[in-house]
Structure formats: C-alpha cells, structure tokens
Length: 315
Image 1 (cartoon, rainbow, N blue to C red):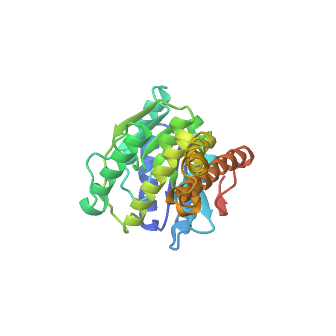
Image 2: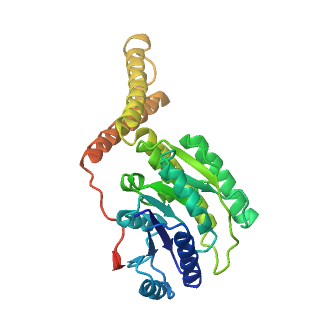
Image 3: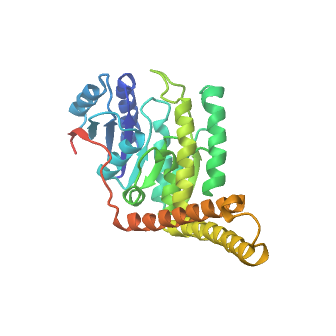
C-alpha cells in the first residue's frame, strides 16, 4: 500500500463526505493504493454514521471510534498503530488542509530525502489575535527549545515514513511536537513544505486559549524529556548534590564558628544561616531522591493504552 491517510476528528460530520471525495479523487488520479483511517474522537454528532456510510461505498475507508473524547494525540496514536501504507499522511477533517498536497508530500518521503515532512501554512485564514499571533509565538518558542527548524509545528498536514510512526509514542497533547519526538527517536531528516490553507467551511474551530497554554506547558515537558528523559538523575541528582553541599558547608561554618571562633555568641538555632542550611540540605536530599525514583520508574515503566476504543471499522 502506498499511502495511509490518518484523519482525527471531533464533530465534523458536515465536512467528511466532501473530504472523502476530494481525497479519493486525488488518489485515483495519481493511481495510489491507499486507505483512509478516520478516528472519531468521541463525537456527539453524526460523524460515525457518516463514516459508516462512506465505508459502504469505499472499502478503503476504515474507522476507529473512541468511547469518549481522549484528544488528538491519542487519536493519532491509534491511527498510527493501524496504518499500513509506506507513507502516512495526517490531516485535519475540517477541510482546511488541502488533499492536493498529498502527491508531492508522498514523493518527498518516498524519494528517501526526508523521514518526515511538515506542512507550513504560510498564508492563513484564521483570526490574527486568537490563532495567528499565538501560533507564531508558540512556533518561535518551539524552534528555540527543540532545535527543530520548522515554521509551523501545529500544522495538521504532515507526511511520515511508516517507520517513523511505528517508533514514536504520541500521548498527552504531544501531537504538536511529533517532529521533535521523531528527532529524539533518531529520524533527523525533517523537511517542510509550504501548503495551501483553506478557510473553514463548516463548524467552529476547536482552538482556544486553553490549548495555547497547554501547548507551552507541553513544550516544557518535551524539552525536559529531550534533555533528561533517559537520565533524570543527571538533572535532579546534580541539583541535589549542589544544594546539599551548600547547606552542609553552611552547617560546618556555623559549627566551627560556635565551637572555636565565637563560643559565647548566639545559639546556632538563633541564627538565620542555620535555617538556610537546614532547608537547603532538605531540598537537596529531595532532589536527589526524585532523580533516583525517576531512574527506577524509567526502568520499570510499561507503555499503556491511553484511550478506549468503542468500535473499529474494516481494520
């Protein structure tokens, strides 16, 4: 199979038929063998019924239906597990991603020039204050933090070699950082392609300020995992040793001062340096224990399914 198209969705019943027809037209005109995997992330409208209807007319249409809304990352993770194509294309279901981009994205991957190609919506049709400006700030911070030089991390239209999606674990809200996850897994040939952005035709955007805040919190998480995910003791242990050493040095100074230099002076417990020393040693010990526990957890953790599937279709 040439291509697997993975499409997460939430309450997008109005756009599904049009999107399916558009994808099918592109695939057939380029003679691709393909599958389209719709992941219904707990929709409350008739999205799943629409997917069922589409599958009756096209055996290439497959579906996964979650028991409730688990999030886009979990939807992509489920789709990646089921994908069989040599190249996996992800796109949103709201018709803002253009299926006409698929052939060129496919060729960029199949030529072995890239492991992953991310779309760049250079010209956008979104609100400047609620989406464009926050997105630019977010992408700048992601570039600086991750070292991955992409202009649009959050673009849903991406292409992956099948090996990439089978070797990364997308969880939480880490779908924004799949290129970073891929880089950390050793897939360093990451490219970018300017893609057409369509104005939303149906429904309302799912983007809000809470997603913007969550995105930056996830950015901190991915930075930490990238730097210390495999060696938490290197961070927490080092901080713990430094703080404990500072506190212990204060304690030695206070003891020497009281015993030899100023025996008639104030009691040690009456001096603020004593409490600085005590607190610093306690915090240092806690940091060291946190690093030690992190190492234990890292060596014993098991990958657990983070979503519950209600139904599968043609998979």
